[in-house]
Image 1 (cartoon, helix red, strand yellow):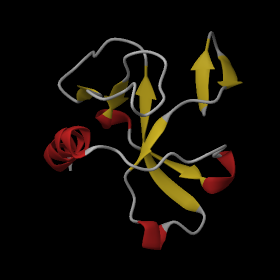
Image 2: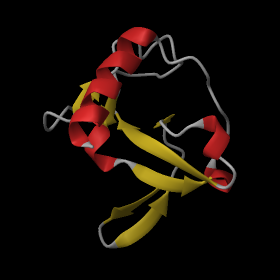
Image 3: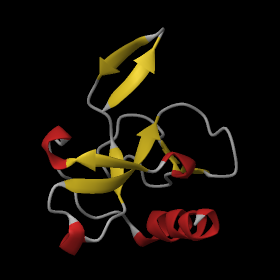
Length: 97
């Protein structure tokens, strides 16, 4: 995942949630970036089951930062976002769009 830090672009492996339909994932994939930073607004959703997903610390999904990313940027896939977390994320996505 690329992000800007002190005026320079930095590339670092970051967790994301894929929100696009699998049928449309030929090259570009729609994602919600995740962070270990605290929630900042109503569109930040704390993942309740972050440890089950293999994340080392509590993690927030930044719904308002939806992005389109080329599939070559993915290192690995972890399936199985739990329904508790997915329903909360989907509600925020519906509200945003």
